[in-house]
Amino acid sequence: MKSSYSILFFIMIIVAIIIFNFIQNSKNGFQNYNITQWSPDLIKRFNIYQTTMNQNINQFNLDILQKQASPAEAEEYLKTGFWPWTDDLKNMYLKNVKSSPIIKIEPQYALNYAMKLYNKNAVTELLAWNTKEGHFLLYGADLGVSEGMPSNLHNTIKCSPDSNNLVKKIYTGMNLWNGYMNSTTTIIKPQDIPKEMPGFSFVNGACNPCVAFDDAGSCPFKLNIKGYDSISEPWQKIWNL
Image (cartoon, rainbow, N blue to C red; front, side, top):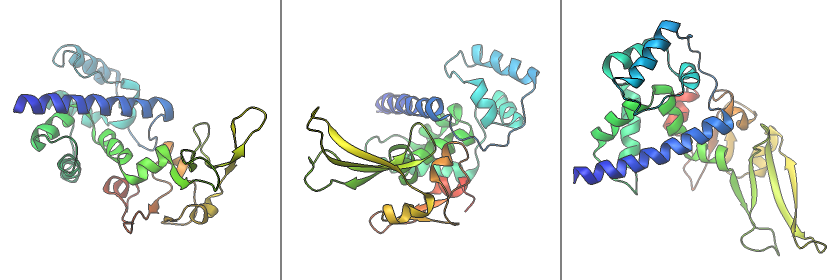
């Protein structure tokens, strides 16, 4: 049974790494960590650790890692093989593992594996993307279908992949010349977001939620989904709420 858990958890970790790397590469991840630069000696010892003790099992991107983890955290990792996490973060991660409707694994095994792989800022970010707030930032919100349009053409409001703007896309009808569907795309001003998207509200006044990709802590917001408007735990930590 434990072997089956290990295989399932390995698959889950691989999927998580793919998603995490996609976010890091496409949006460059959160950038509001105030981390002291690592010394050349620490970088050298970390590289040696990766190729010897770690046997290159976990490949870390040192450019990104140095923005996420402090020198003290790196020293702790070299000493113990685990990134230091707070008790609150451990409990948050365990809660996510236990609530997974798809994969059931031994929670302590999951925690130990994750602490070998993710520093505390990285795992907070990973957990944050897997919340209603994270899904909204990554994929946007569904505004339904315009009258007379095919049921598979949903209007959306989402962060533009080319800029830090929130944009609304509305399908308006078929172009008789080429057979494609016409649509209009407009930039939504921060103060207009609650009017355009039911259930959305700001915590500290109007701001641009899409700046989370560059400065995660600067624009806290709430999403009311089916009467549940509490802010997810990872974002509470990121927004210091």
